Length: 427
Image (cartoon, helix red, strand yellow):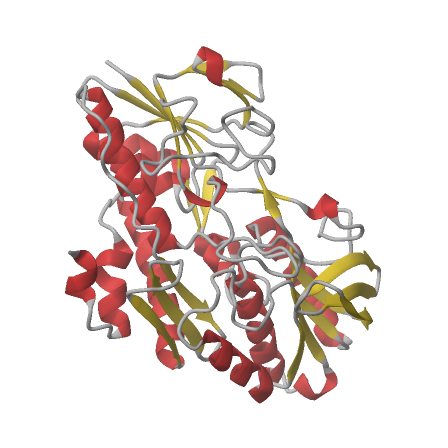
């Protein structure tokens, strides 16, 4: 008998639990630790922030999912991973022993790295968590009664740029529907070296597509932007040139602002030598396995991935759902191999797929592999991307409610988007 413990129950953690259960022996025990008792579909948060979704529509209780699959569930946060002892210390003082540990926590949100940033003690809104998105909606309801300038984007060190573009366009769509778009100047501020970089060096023609969308919707932009601080109604930004030297300083007034923060590792693993890098992201080998602690695996946003290329302002690499699904599949198979006294051999593909909804259209891209040069380097714009994002939301939530482990991206997304190379990719 072996005990496998998973920390986290988000976009990667729940699929990891369901997939891991499929690969365990009947005598093995699987336990999930999470600081929440519900799952919230994070990709829907931009819709929540403008009132297009309610919390109830994107939230699922976790206990019934795990009970149905005979998975132990502890709705208490992890305080510290005690790697030398093969234990996880919980926030309430208890400890959980493990033979194998899978870290699937997602990131900590580093609002504190910039003065005035964030929805708790700062002046900007957030869509990173559903409770933040609900707070953003409260602010949005007040804003549309007395509209003014909007500043939206992603600060230095951010690694998930898609939601910033999404929210900018969703706000713009909502303003047009309310017939008050003419009262709202919008500025997109990003640490990317150019629009559509996305932390991936661009994918297909994302630069051209997204610049075109920005122009069509009269949204100004500032790239290579380093946010110095945020005040109640103003963002202070230093724009750098291509060599990293100061180009221009901006003082941007706003009545509403949403800025994505940089990510870092969670406190439970931060600073553990050999387990994480200086930012607290988990170090892994090609098999999702930590080199120092080979019984610890990691998947999703908490994994350490180096930047695709150097940029004047630091940018991170996004971890999309397609990439996370491949990490999940590889991890489950490698742990089963170890249980059978075999060596792990399965590697995640780490390809990138993203659907960015713009309210009434959208931009999608596929990067295989994510680091150029690529075998598939595809992007597309149109209403079909909006419809695909809605379909993904509905299918994923249905899949979790039913406890289905079938991968969504590999089996459906390519066909939905009309990509002809599905067979080549799957092989």
